[in-house]
Image 1 (spheres, helix red, strand yellow):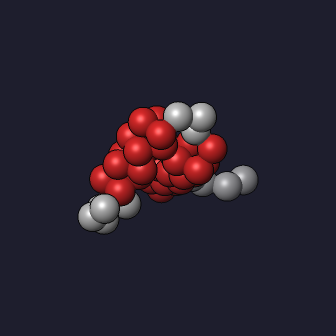
Image 2: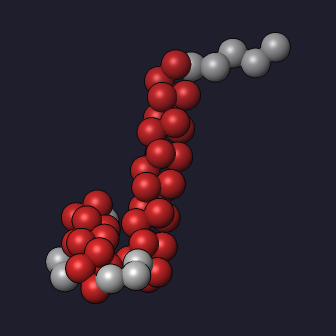
Length: 53
């Protein structure tokens, strides 16, 4: 039987959530119907990736 460390499970869960969030924001930045929504998605994506626009 596998013995899972709670800290490892928490780290994996939060990493998966982060990757899912970045993926959704990247898709929104590409496919949003309005310029304002694309700009907002790009801004949030830049903040999450710790980059400047």
